Length: 195
Image 1 (cartoon, rainbow, N blue to C red):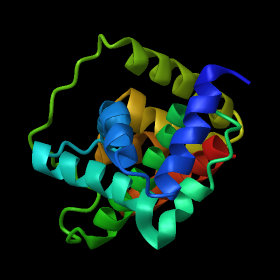
Image 2: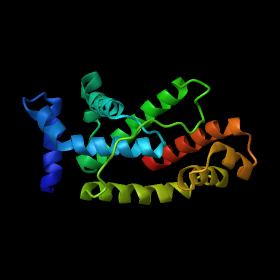
Image 3: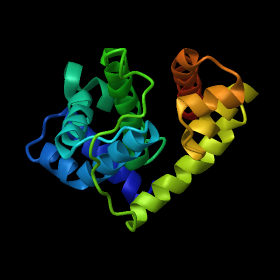
Image 4: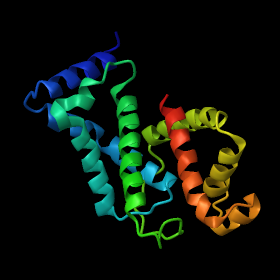
């Protein structure tokens, strides 16, 4: 058993046991990771939020860990590092928040390319690069399992950064069906990456 694995399991047990100082230690150790993952997911969704919105999402990730008597944390079994596990939890929570926001947006803004001011992130941090490379390999593997239409739609939207109008023209799709199809493709991709 590695020292890191042992540390992770002990920290989770201390959190669940409500040991004094455990939560503070956990937040100090992992807040930068959670913040960077939230930013990454927001960018994947092509949403540019202000710092207060990003911080609210980070707070919600940490809040999810303690709700219902630490249900999420009790699910940590040590099969991966705590940082890897927390990356998945953060990603899932962000997807839920952004999906909720997407359905709450007025119809006039859904499917538009409107953006708010974004938050800068340092791309030079080693941990960030490792996480991105891990995500990229999982993304490539998951993309192979999507149907051709979904792959093409995701590629045009995220890689080529085409507007809905341009995608509609190239794929011969009505503009109002692009948003829902893109959302289904994203959901399927998410399921594949979390499998």
